Length: 356
Image (cartoon, rainbow, N blue to C red; front, side):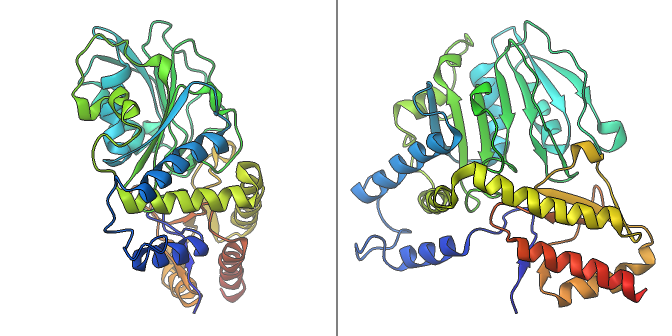
């Protein structure tokens, strides 16, 4: 039976990427060696890294604009540390928007480096909306936000104008919609949502913001060191980088970010329309802040849970259970999830209504 993968991450990737990756595990580039065993200094892998970094900038529209793309390790969680290490000035301060669990984790790490100003928070409402109408201190070393909150199903639809460098954790919606990426000075994202398997983290940074903190940074945590070594300061996560390249190639062939945005909007509109129409369900996120990547919803009457759970599992749906912080259900609709899978879920929701 076909599976419809709604996992929040690691998550669904394009089927052709699975196929190409599997072939490379057996024999990469007709070398007689597996992608899992080749040297990261080999000609074949150096070409992979070079193309992956270039393709990131091409898809984001940042070619020739002073940005560098890096594939690092440690997940977005390590970037919570690396960002203040590299950008917060000694005796300076940074501004953060607290819109969810991962934003809160980033704030926790920044506090180790200096004054950390939380300009607004939706924590008291269980992060069911994106805070608005806040003021960013003019003397902040940078402003940090999280574009999409996987757990709570909220997403920033616009970004503030600020004199301070704008930094964004885009782990769960990068490459999903067309925006002006040049408004950001630094973007980071774990690969395991829209870009590849777990194991690598993408960092896109404008070089001019670096080297201004006044502090000594350990080499492995220094963006400038990684840039100087072309993302090869230490042994990179070879297979995740390769699978990420394949996913980026798939996206370019599809028509790029503008093309996938139309598909993502269609998926989100289909599901949210059903959530709002069906009297058995209710969404948990404020409508104006609903994520196109992660739709969170509840049953109005929990007495129907056993029946509904049995129905969606029988339909081949996987990974629909909500995070414990919210409960209910979470449908993660990343780039590679087909519209067909969303229709299957909607049909199950309608069948529940018709059989109650």
